[in-house]
Length: 240
Image (cartoon, rainbow, N blue to C red; front, side, top):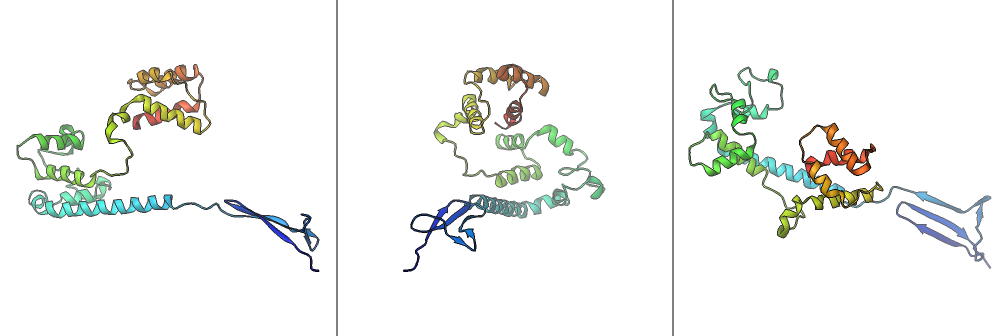
């Protein structure tokens, strides 16, 4: 009667272990070596990461397409006023020494109105959009273009999981503080106490230099001990 051997496998996410035994679970040898071992390989990954890159590329391509369509609509009118307007926009990333001598600025090179005047009057694009919405007075077609192309390019997205019935939740400090505490717990950091939220809410919005703010946070959170975790909240606070 032929000997019966059994193959045992231990299949994991990034390895497979194997062993060959007899009925008594004794390892079988082949050329003097026990027949057991493992094969290690790279752990399998889902497609979420690659899908995110593809989605971003498609989103950027569609944005560029929308901007080009807006350019085609405004180009005839803007060309009558400023023939080099779109050229300057395309060359915006270049040093001023590498462009035409007449293009000292990127958006407006008029004698009576330059980029300096534009940004002084409209610190952000939202100031311009707000004025165009509220005023019936005629405006430079280039100003109208800048507002329209921004709205078309940044039309919003549908990836935000914010609850539409509780929009103010994103502005509540206790919500942000809870998320930071959860992050610290997940990364095995010393978690801050819940009652510290009130003191932090008073310190973070204050206008003071980084060193003073860091010292105040250290005093509140770690009794003055310098830890890298404090730097994290200093960095993420402007984005919250």
